[in-house]
Image 1 (cartoon, rainbow, N blue to C red):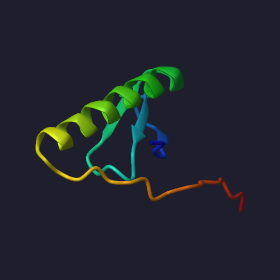
Image 2: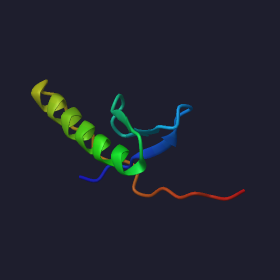
Image 3: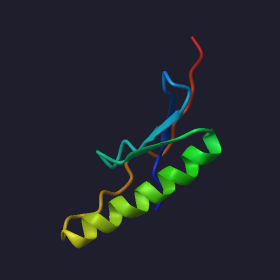
Length: 70
């Protein structure tokens, strides 16, 4: 499955990553590349936890994201 990940700059300079379709699934890294690796691990662990608890795996709802300049 492909989940949308939102990356944001943290005040301390780190990069925060969150997955809107998986509430509570987030991570961070010192660089964008690091944040991508960390969030991939976080997604895998989050999904494993849901399976272990017998909960449904949320299907990705966001199919496209775009930056709109204003």
